[in-house]
Length: 524
Image (cartoon, rainbow, N blue to C red):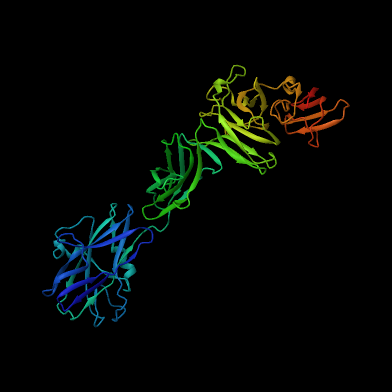
């Protein structure tokens, strides 16, 4: 802003704004004190001689962000020709560039309809304008700042003191308004986004993060939308201060109104300390997650390179299902599916219904290499017992349903993650059920004859339930044709991968300290 005084009669401001607000949107308007209408110049009125005078206009400053901040107000009279150690603050003569008249300012959080009439009688409460080129500017400017209200509105009034010996001519000054943030360090966000390769069940979605700042954290906001939506919605996150570290906060929000929504959600996080903002993700580059409904068939495309297929609970972030396919486990690209089943509509084992159960498809699909399946169970109170039925978690195993009965596939219990995992060689219905210690009969295949023709029916025999076993297949002449380790399935193929001829074959399985043998028929 250029400020001019001309012919000792009139003070005028030619508007030329200079602002330094890199982080916050800012607007400024010049308004008349009398009726609050917009103005184009600052007018001190007719000068009747030396003394105090008040501008008939004020500056209306608007901060678009609802944040706490401070501003510095000063002049930048770089064309001063007087001595460098003299004060050049205020209005400078355009003729001599060595003479000046002082300039005062005061800021308010509300409009002063009477034009702050107390200016003359209470001049001590006003701020004498500083100039950034003064030698003592850095030492004094800290006392010449104004704290903007949280509403983001400031009303800035200007006054002057006309001296008796004023030099005739025009006077001007360049007025600057600058963000005076005492906090230059932005908050740090530690946030683990949802795995974009997993499908998240959309009953509830919980987002949480750890936020740290050198002062304090004032707000945390989650922004989100579904692909195809134009605008983002927002939810304020709850901030809980750490009892041992006052600059650390836990931010969390749970979206509870997403039932029935599926598709791809885009989201990002915004955190502010009142002066600085940090974003995790952004409006233009958000994080993404795939959402599905618990009662629908969920699917994912795979090729020969394999990959993972996971379904995660949106609130607890626990992986309910985790399938891992090594490269070469399937021969061509296809879509794998998973659908949750009602466990109470399935047969029981020893009086117990499955803890959880899913049908994986295509049903009957056989893998060229074993894949890993992990299913989760609930033990919220960490007492070692499954919440739904009180079964000791250490007794849980993965079973598959052959259409007539459940077959024990074994598995390893991870008591920390509350999952049971096992290697499987085909798709069917799988569930978690209790199992006792294995006996010799548990190692023998229930199949007496297999028909490995690729129709998905009776294509293989299962030996026991432990992948910690060794299976050998012999022909009737006693020649070993297949050795299987790390798996429990024989699919009727020899070591070269060819389906064997129809006939009777001898098996021998060693597992859990037991050594069991018998015969098995193959019909092509």
